[in-house]
Length: 153
Length: 153
DNA sequence: GTCTCAAAGGATAGTTTTTGTCCGATTTAT
DNA sequence: ATAAATCGGACAAAAACTATCCTTTGAGAC
Ligand code: SF4
Ligand code: SF4
Image (cartoon, rainbow over all chains, first blue to last red; front, side, top):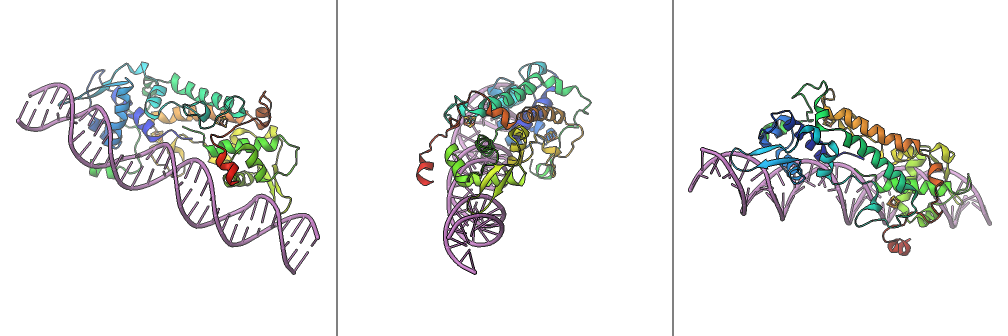
C-alpha cells in the first residue's frame, strides 16, 4: 500500500511547472535539479504526462515542458493515474482477472469502497490547491541523499 | 497502489474461521483448501495474525487456529496492518525517513488525508460485516488456476 | 517415554514491480 | 549543418511480493 516515487515525483514536477508563468517552457534538467529528482527518471515520468495530455512538450533547442491546462484543472488523481496506471484495488475487476468469481466475494465491495474513497480525495485536489498552503516556494521536498545527484547530474 | 494478496488471503482466511463455531480449531490445511490459498503462504500469514493477537493457535495433534475475539471486534484494518505492516503513504513520516524535510511538503498533508480516508473505510468494517451480505457461504473467492493447488496439496 | 500431529520460525528461491540508466532517433532553433 | 532538447525503447539494479522447504517446538495419544 504505497504511492510510488514515480507518482510523487510527477506531482512535484508538475508543481514546479505550475509555479511559473503559464506557458513558460522548462527543461527537464531544471526541474530535476530544483526538485532533486533523478533526471532520466523524471524524463520518463513526463513522457507519460505528455501522453495523458497534462503537459505539452516542445522539442529541439529552446524546448521544454509546460502545463497543458491551468493548475486548477489538473487533479492529483489524473496525475497519479497517468503515471501509475488506474488505481485498482480489486484484482478481479481488471482485464485479465487474476481471481475470477467476481460475483460474490465479500471483499470486492469493501475494496471498491476503499478505492472510491481514496480516489475521491485525490480527485478533489488540484495542483492549484497544493500550491496555496504556507509551504515556502522552492522549499519543497528534499531527498535523503542528494549528494549522488549533485555529483552525477 | 495495491492491497497485496497476503492481505486478501488473511481476510479471506479469517472469514473462513469466522463462519464456524466460535472456538472451533481449524487446521491451516482445511482453510487453505477451502479458500484456495497456497498452504505454506497462508501458514506464514496466520503466524502474523497470531502475533497480532487476532487469532490464537494450538499446536500438536488436534491443534489448529481459532479467532481470538468475536468477528465484530476484528476490523479489516487490524488484519491488513497485521499482515502488511502499517498503512503509510508518506515515506517522510516513517522511521528512517527516506525524504527528510517533513515540514513544508505540499504532498504530505494530502497523502495524510488520503491515508486517513482509506483507514477509515477499513477500520469501520469488521469481519462480522463482511459475513452478512448475500454472498453465498463457501462460494467465495476462487483463484485463477487452482489446478496447481489441487495437484500439489 | 515415545510417537505422531500440527504450528513456529527461519532460510531461501522465483517472480514481479519499481526505480533508474543509456543510447540512438527525431524534432526544432539558430 | 549543428547543437539542443524530447521521444522511445531496451536494459539493469534493487526492492517487494509470493511461495516453498525444512528443522524445531509444543501438545496429545498410546
Ligand atoms: S479475493 Fe475477492 S476481491 Fe480479491 S480478487 Fe478475488 S474476488 Fe476480487
Ligand atoms: S515528497 Fe513530500 S510527502 Fe513524499 S516523502 Fe518527500 S516530503 Fe514526504
